[in-house]
Image 1 (spheres, rainbow, N blue to C red):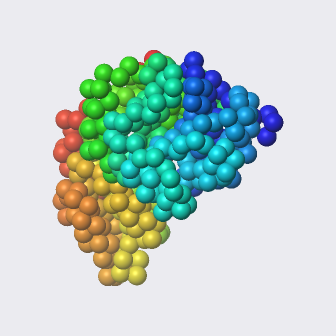
Image 2: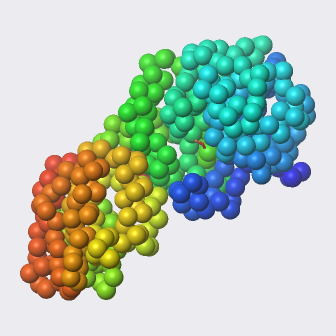
Image 3: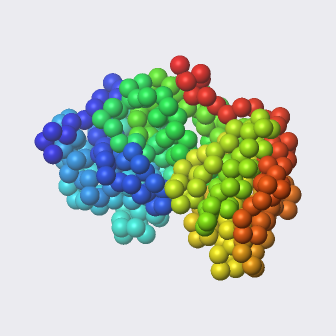
Length: 408
Ligand code: FEO
């Protein structure tokens, strides 16, 4: 671990986190590009560590800290978020560092006790300040972004916002800053993170962003707990968060389906034809071939969700049920939906899908299309018409974002 070094991100702040190149599943979210667990060292009079890393990465954290200062010289530890990717090695760090004080939000104090039995942590109230001697940290609660304990902290002087999960992404890299990475990857991974982690809390995210804007805090660096540090594209990521949290949907539909003997696939492609003919951008996502996290990423700005499944044992395919379960938990709002599927004899899948979509408060376009065994040309025409009907419902929405035109 001697090769691990800190990276300076502002006059007094160093990134001392860990890079996890191997992780491919983060509590059900496919992390194809790995991730980082970011921790930050503030070289104030009271030397302060902001967050720690996942437990197995303790030595990497220590090595990066040692490239700046001996860990025993850390005075304070601030826990912005108690989830174990950020607190996993906190007990070990407390043993090594023996800090004078540890700070967390009121809910964070409770969460750290319930996780690790930690006591004696100082609770910081919403809007409270931590005096670092020659600098101060201001803490703002961001409950439920991503856990009830979550808070962000702002270092005046250096103008750094430590945003914990907010503005993060699962992306392993040795590049530490937004301007060192490809714009499309930044967009895709930021959108994927928002869709999979924060979508459910969009109404809260909108309020937090407004609060940060209204606070008048001058922010030149956003230091999240995952992925790159933002220093060049802060207005861009802020604007994206505003759009995502406001659920600004686009003229875009996703078709999620699985197929037994290609009949439901043929139906999906005919619906795709109708949508395309109606001027809608379409993604056709096979439920077996596409991770649930990627499906939800496409749903971040899609105005229509069309779901297809053959009938299997009087029900729907498990792969489709998996994705619907995941989407249901994230509660995408403002979406219209439709269903389709082939069957052999009993034919329950469309009824099941409609009930599922209705339960998710997704407004249905039509009753869905059912086809026995193999679709004939008139069946495919019904599917194409369903695509046209859905397109008609969302035709006035704007086109999806094209990253290269926006992120310059
Ligand atoms: Fe990265 Fe909610 O933890």
